[in-house]
Image (cartoon, rainbow, N blue to C red; front, top):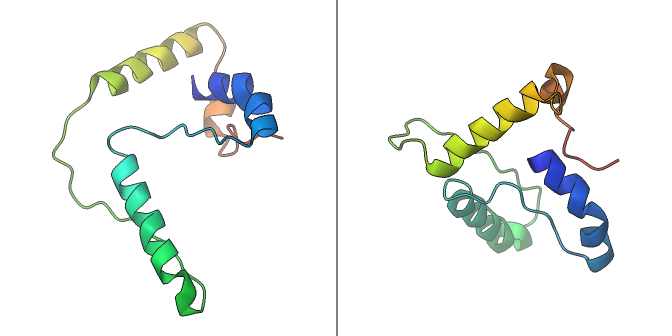
Length: 96
């Protein structure tokens, strides 16, 4: 699904200057936004800034979106739209 969306909307986003955000679920936004705000606040301090995330415990459960993503991936594999090589490619969603 993510590869389909990136391919489908890449040219429109490039022309308009929009950014395609594929990880926007409830698990992604708070930590990503907090990290961005911290880096912005520290950027004037001088020297390079590195961000690292470490998760030691998770007590949540699968959401409907997670379940549907798994189902969509299974369908894509069965239909031949996703291969093992694609799944192993860390740059699969990067245009060009």
